[in-house]
Structures are given as C-alpha cells and as structure tokens.
Amino acid sequence: MTDSKNYQEDLASIRHVMERSVKFISLSGLSGILAGIYALAGATAAYFMIQYPLPVIYYRQESLQQPDIIVNLLLVALAVLAASIITGVLLSARKAKKHSTSFWTPTSKRLVVNLAIPLATGGIFILILLNHGHYGVVAPASLIFYGLALVNASDNLFEEVRYLGYSEIVLGLISATLPGYGLLFWAIGFGAFHIFYGTLMYRKYDQ
Image (cartoon, rainbow, N blue to C red; front, side, top):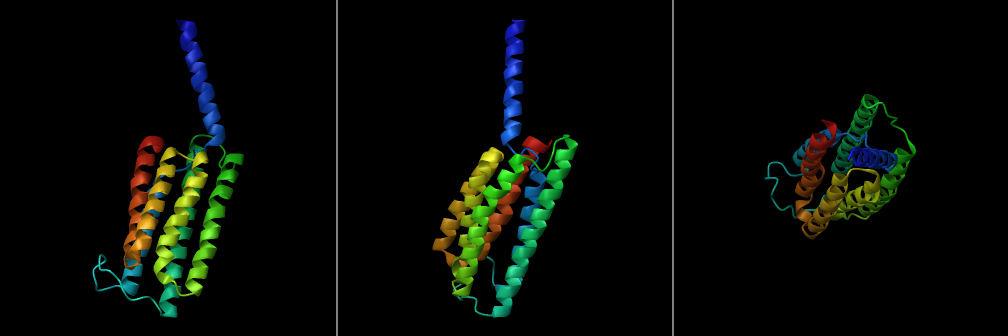
C-alpha cells in the first residue's frame, strides 16, 4: 500500500515538473483583471470621442472620417495595450519571484513568439484597413487576431487562456456582421472577457 502511494506521489511530482517545463505558470490572473479595467477605461474615452451623447448600444451608421479622432483613438488603444503589457510583465515577474522561479525562461520566450506573430500580423492588417478607410471592421479584426494569438500561445499557458481566445474569435466574427456596434463589442471582448477569465485564473492559480 505504501509503495503504491509513493508511486502515485512520484507520478504527480513528475507531472508537475513536466507541466512547469512547458507552461508559463507565472502568468498572473490579476493582470488579466487589470487589463480588462484598462480596456473599459479606454472604451469609455472612445465613447466620449465618437458617440456621446448617444447610448453605447446605439447602432452607429456613420463612418469615422476625421483624421484627428482616428489618431486619438489609436493613441487610446496603444495606451491600453502598453498599460496591459507593463502590468502583465510586472505582476508575472512578482509571481515568479514569490514562487522562487525564473520569469524569463525558454517557455516564456516561446510564449512571446507565439503571441507576437498573430498580433503583429493583425496590427499590420489593421493599419492597412485604416489606410483604406475600412474603419468599421477594425474592432472585429482586433478581436479576431487577438483571439488567434491567445489560441496559438495557449499550449504554454493555462487552459482558461485558450477559451478566452475562442471567445474573442467568436465575438469578433459576430462583431464583423454588426460593424455599427464595434465599440460595444470591443469593450466586451477586451474589457468584460478579460475581467471574467482573469478572475477565474486568479481564484484558481493565484490564491
């Protein structure tokens, strides 16, 4: 009986070591929650730029044409992205230090590459859309490419990240059929979804 128990403990230990070698376990769920809050703040700023005083659920038929507003929206999006990345790195590094593990490992390097390829492709594609005046599909494109990046990197992350990626892709496709609701879908995808999945991860892995 004792030998069987020891055997099971050894298997569990081996499984844990193997998981640590392929998973970026330092990812903080709190960073996802904060990223969602940043996104909602950015969506609120965008709302006052392009839609106020109309309700956020109002179907926007007019296409953006003012270059200054487009530039301001890009600056808001970049600010949200920068704040999310910085927060994610700082909190993940703190979590790694807390668990006496290294933050920059071969796994984290693979993670960066797997995330960067779809994100960079999506970013270039969105700039092409903007250059040709296709503003209505920018929000769907950002959601879809972000979702693809998460799915592509999910082998090195927690399972919840994969489902977040699927959710972003589906939401982006729905948004593509309703371009007048782009801001609302953007707020749901980058705001509400991040808070929801970040909370799940925080309660499961950060406690």
